[in-house]
Image (cartoon, rainbow, N blue to C red; front, top):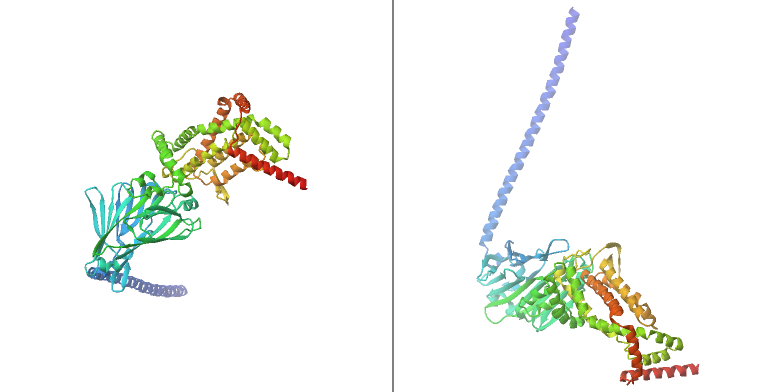
Length: 614
């Protein structure tokens, strides 16, 4: 019993010791946790206090800066201002003005979309700007584009125009005002540069205006768009243009009325109502197709202001499409020539487009909604108008076909004697009253029509985004297959179905014509039906589908007309009888025929002498 009690006591003692140790350790851990918690809370409190102090300090700094800014005046205020924006819209344009430079920093066209579906934007977040040096102190200048103008508001005048005004005031009361007049439905914006205190603002009354333009990609094919880009201007009353798909520089010593950076379907133009005295334009065009910049242009224009302390320089900006009617009606001399309806070597086709193609196209468009059908009907009209030429050509071909058996006999008779064969063939043509060039001349006369339509379809902004059949956009090439590589010589990395149809129909016409004319002695003429379609395939593959569709329709109409005329209009028996009758009539040699016979006779004698010498 005592032993049991002793064991019990020992057990309780051990339990007490263990409990004490446990409580001691737990208490110590609890204290440590409490200390750590307190340390954490103290750290948080310190951080919060630091944040509060920083916020107060920042607020104090902002207040101090605001107070300091409010105390700035004159040019110091213009240099250290803060940029703000003002959005202004009309029915056609969306414009964002910036107080920095007091000028547009973004301009988008509401009615036009880029190839990726976004709005056509001609100024991208300040990518384009104009500037001029301003005297702000003795021997110190600043660029106007870097000055912060004060926005004076947007007001409406009696004509419903929005007048946007920005102003900078100098140290001695001199001022610069940028005034923009945004008309309700116009791409043309009036810009009046008003200078009060010209003697101090500008050196020697000379305005040196710098105008920078970064024309960016709007169409699907950036390479083709670069090829269509141009610097267009009117210098001393004369219109001129310069291709901009390579780097270059142009200086102008005569008065410049306006200058335009023209892309395929849009342009950015600066107009000086009173002309600039002279100027220079430098431009670079990236060779990398991955770059979205079409051309970067830097222009500088000089203008001597009239004597006096106040001056107004009236200018205008055009941000819009290369639309012939719009440009013709903006009231600026020769701006409609920005639209390439035929220029340079092909300027002779411009009247064809102005007075025939465009009026007919617009007339048909009033009644037909599909541009593809409009092009087909325009093609039919042109082919019917030129059908007398076609008939003359086919009639000449029919006469040549009637003489084919006799020409074959002459060919067999003379063998390798090409000189003798040529003389007898010319004699046969003269006796039968046949002009061997009768079929060529009408065809040559249709070349101007082709070049006119090439210019018209290549520059018609109305075709942008217009789909027809498998073509999604008639202003550019259609694509039925993409290639994993690019073929040189302008073919590209795609296959155009309209190009293939144009090539195939051209090949059929060539084969048909070869069968209708006598055998050709010139090997090149024999292979021309095969060579010409290959040339078309290479060079047409990147052309607008409107043009290749026109060419396809024109070829189909040509085949139908040719077959109809040959089989139902031209009487071959009558032609044979007429040729026989012509042989009985006396013939007077023309000077050209006599000269040709003389040349052939001389060549024949030379050949005979060479044979005898051998």
